[in-house]
Image (tube, rainbow, N blue to C red; front, side, top):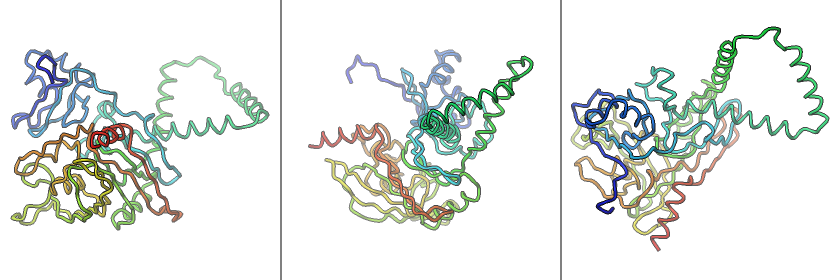
Length: 378
């Protein structure tokens, strides 16, 4: 970067005095020459990230470990329901392709947020009902357009008669119409609501399963617990790992405020969980490798932790690039985000027993980057 070139963002590291503060106050503390209106405007215009994630909630709580980026220009709009691709759906479950940049489910401490604050940044789970409505509406449109002309004429005649019979006898208050429409929409969303049975990190893309009933959620939950769901991820990492299995005990705080393997000198930890990841190399790309990671357990950040602690940093990982001693591994890969993608899901249908298997290729952003990485390695 030349001396005259302006950096695209300001980087702000928070401190202990910021614990429990809200985002807009943490920004005002550092941007003393900005008005409150300018700070709120920057947040609303998608110019603020917290720990690499876009944040549009002025009242978002922050802590001392958070890193804020204030961008000069607005970032791309958040994921919308229309961006979601439905891979498979029936009365019991739905398989979808999750884009990067959206949280899978609402964190426990955010469960009681107001509707207005939820709508600022909906979770993937909260967008699925609208995505399903759009999917079924498109399906009905396709089915309708395929009917022969006589059937369409008959149907249109019936609709005209129904419309005549149902024509209101007096003009209603437009506000009443809007209220009724909103109630109908909420009822439809409730009908298409789903239950998450596993999660992907915010910046991880790929296949996810959602249950459509509580009993199916319980059945799928048991399948995950008993290792009856095949989950294979593709990842691009530093150096060239050999085929191996990582088997360790992970804890919520390994000593630096981040999740990681339990220190050898630590006694019992109530947060400890066994984590097993099977790694298979696929391709060497210069200083990097494309690998497959198959999960036997599904702990938070499991793949990222195992790879980082073994010296194979996941390209684009902004958290586990630093070990518990504070030593940072430089990442010169220029990955647009963490290069981790849920590529394969396979399981038996909980009702029919049919074997279901789904694959999803790299999304466009990582595909472009990987193509460039291969070209540079030649």
